[in-house]
Length: 87
Image (cartoon, rainbow, N blue to C red):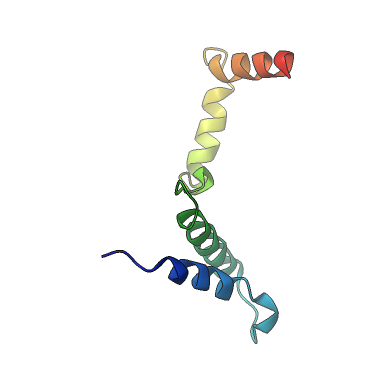
């Protein structure tokens, strides 16, 4: 069953009303709210999308950075150089 289109919009609007909050959110709660805002916003777009920043945790991101820094891993540096030359 599909939720009404205005339901996601209402949820996103409610999440963005920070000035009406009567309490302080913890850093974890802020992260959860950021995730909820992003998901609600992404699902109201056409085409729908989710931000890739939520696909990796800190350890996974660190591992990816270490892998791409290795001399054997050239695609990222090659792509960056091509984009820089072409920009």
